[in-house]
Image (cartoon, rainbow, N blue to C red; front, side, top):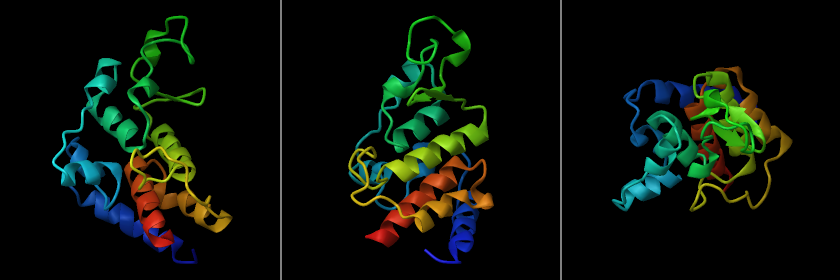
Length: 165
């Protein structure tokens, strides 16, 4: 990556801002990612298991596209299960942390964590990258234009992976 990182991130964000703002899965369709492959094959994407655990449709879609299973949606327990904490229901739980769908910064954080850790073009969106990101590549996610923008963060990860392959 080079000095044009900020420009690439800005272009991704501009493109996303011009999309329909509905909460359909189509807004997460980026060339080659998990949603794109399923839609191209005319296969239904089942978000019901996520929603049954308390996620709103938008949160379910984000968890799906980031390669997180339905069990990543907290059902209203403390982190890791056990004691009942109703306020946690519907939040994304990952590696011992909760990410609140009402907090754009937290959603951007989980999108960034997943974008760095996994290959967004893998079949299940959850396979590790064959070669980890370099320090320069990781910096693309620190661009201010991506603050509080989980969809743009994922789109940037998809674009970055296309550029790497």
